[in-house]
Amino acid sequence: DWNMPDYVGEAVDRIRAQVGHEEVILGLSGGVDSSVAAALIHRALGDQLTCVFVDNGLLRLNEAEQVMHTFARNLGVKVVHVDASAQFMGHLQGVSDPEQKRKIIGREFVAVFQAEAAKLANAKWLAQGTIYPDVIESAGAKTKKAHTIKSHHNVGGLPEELNLKLLEPLRELFKDEVRELGVALGLAHDMVYRHPFPGPGLGVRILGEVKAEFADLLRRADAIFIDELRAAGWYEKTSQAFAVFLPVKSVGVMGDGRTYEYVVALRAVETQDFMTAQWAELPHSLLGKVSSRIINEVRGINRVVYDISGKPPATIEWE
Ligand code: XMP
Image 1 (spheres, protein in one colour):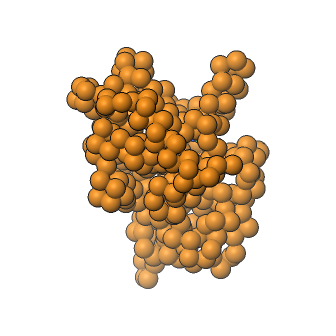
Image 2: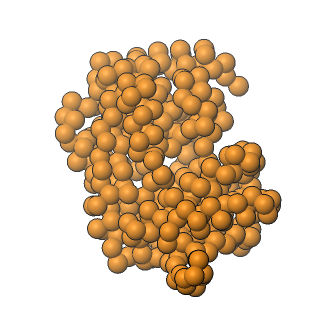
Image 3: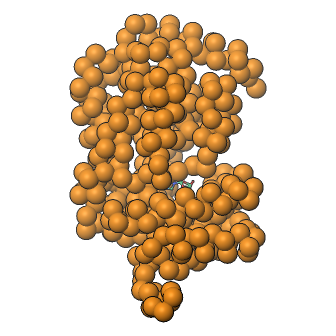
């Protein structure tokens, strides 16, 4: 149990001693860990830090704007914003296998990040938001040969060729400590207490082939769901909640017309460790409100269903 203000000071001193006057790059994803790492390293090193934010076209609604707003505008962090959505979409075209999609998204991220890193020729350090549970997990994976159901790609695993020294200032912290640290560094509560979001993003929430058009519909449906959960006080009571795009069309009726449009599934779970999970018993009135808002506001979706599967046997994500 740390005293956070003291901890910030000690962590800042440690980073300064470690890095000296050299330059650091960090892949900012918008997630909690890389965000807190960026804020901490920026506190310690100011302009010696450059963040690279890659928009893969599979982020949540307004996520790129929020990241740029928080880091570049409010905190004054140097952030290179790379819009690589077209590149990601191009490589994902025609690919429907979930693991294949994960591989492509992970590989393209590394390619884009590497190209940006090459432009920052002075950088000597690669910073990552690795936290203590990641350290344990990868140690376990090496010795036990982890039995993986899904290849969880994260921002980590950047290739050695970058020839950079690793800076991992969150390595000894648990998730709740990382969140406290984020708040102590002035990051917004809502961002620091956000539900987890998978590395491949909407890429594994659009079943089958990923298309920009599907991602646009899903982003808007998901934002409505999350807004309503927050407004009803259910966001904090669930561990993870999101919408899933089903590339299936069904018939509906609107006004005097017949519609033939796509389906969105809503998923909300409660879990301690994400290894097992229960579906959240959201109030029917809340589900009804989310459903009618999605169908009325997102043209292209005419049906909303709620996922009532536990893990196991279902997983939290649909892919
Ligand atoms: P599942 O679907 O396996 O998800 O029950 C458990 C937790 O892991 C997240 N998840 C991922 N995170 N890359 C990630 O960084 C991935 O490929 C990935 N797949 C699943 C999921 O969101 C949940 O929190």
